[in-house]
Amino acid sequence: MNTKRRNCSCLYRGSYIVSVVCLFTAFFAAEAPTAATLEERVAQLESKASAPAVNAGDNAWLLTSSALVLMMTAPGLALFYGGLVRRKNVLSTMMHSLFLMGLISLLWFLYGYSMAFGEGNAVFGSLGQYFMLKGVGGAPNPDYAATIPHQTFMLFQLMFAIITPALISGAFAERMKFSAFVLFMTLWVTVVYFPLAHMVWGKGGLFNWALGGKIPVLDFAGDTVVHISSGMSALVCAIVMGKRLGFPTEPMPPHNVVLSLIGTGLLWVGWFGFNAGSALGSGELATSAFAATHFSSAMAGLSWAATEWMMKGKPSVLGAASGMVAGLATVTPASGFVTPSTAILIGLLAGVLCYLAVAKLKARFGYDDSLDVFGVHCVGSTVGMLMCGLFASTEVNALIGSTFKVGDKVISLAGGAGQFMNQLKGVLFTMALAIVATFVILKIVDALVGLRITEEEETQGVDLSQHGESAYNE
Image 1 (cartoon, rainbow, N blue to C red):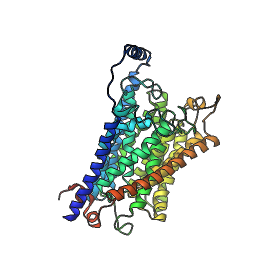
Image 2: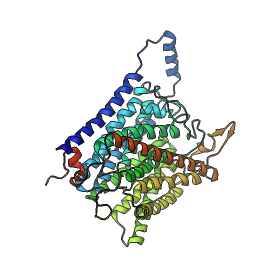
Image 3: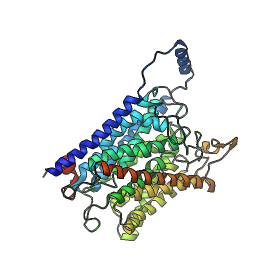
Image 4: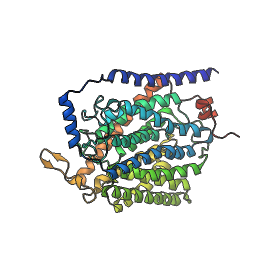
């Protein structure tokens, strides 16, 4: 009984802290409405008259892509992760993805979108410019997407913000308190994700090659922002929190591989929205990114299975599925810059290298990354970023040959040694930020509410100890 009271108290404290942060921000950042003068109204009308027109086809594709990316979180990732854990922890694992759909949406509404895409400095956007989505309406923002409503662009980017922290949850599955989870994710997206999104995609961001950045990093759909940041943070979580009880001596097989395979299929389909949607229109570039995404995943599934077959004697179904996900993650930064032939090469490397990271690297160092977030997402995405630096083609995306300037001189960002080094800088910066920030946040959360459930609760299962429910009533 005392343990239950202590857990409830921790949960209430964690939820209370999140609520206070959100309400505090809303109270102090809200602005009193002011009546527009005649001149201001005339200026608004002129601005609307000169605003770029919305393209119905582009808008339809981006809204569809937004739905596809949200589907990647739930049911896609929820099923993929849920099937991989033991039956006593399936609900808690799926709850991570479901809960983040609500939590991150609220933070995005309050200050996240403004922090990521407002006009600030090289690291942070303006907290006030789009606070509570002020000014984010039906008119396009030509800096980001000239043919779709600003609100559509905002929604599309929100779906990326939702799935990124959900990926991390696979590393500490089966052992983190839910109160710690809520507080950790709130702090992590604020300190890591929102600034990284601004640096890579926001106007004036440090790594934004198209909108005034200093270091031109090519990341079409988010390997630095999404996969490397989450994968490296996942490794830090696994090390700081420690191993699950019985790992690695006790068998911990997935309780339902069928669920994971369904999740894999949903992730593959949703990833077309993730990558092809990042063209921000329904033209040739979207088609090229769609093709690169598909062929990389197909090749990675085959190369993972072949490698496992050679090294273990049998190709597992779950291994083929993991390879497919690895191929999707690895091609993400390059999907809008490379040909299908290069995508096949990227997928080949993704399957082999990610398999070795999961099967060999993890065993060598003994960390308990429960669902192999680091081995698949961070290792694969690092490979993809560097391959993009070598093989980015102006034939696929002509803008990389004519957009970035140093002074008045146009610098081509096509594949080669120079762009490889730019990509490497982006990768190393992302890793460093994720490592330092995640470690500090974990220590803060541990001091406030504690990170791990007790040994008794872990034996019982997170479903019952944290949520009072069981997935299977027998």
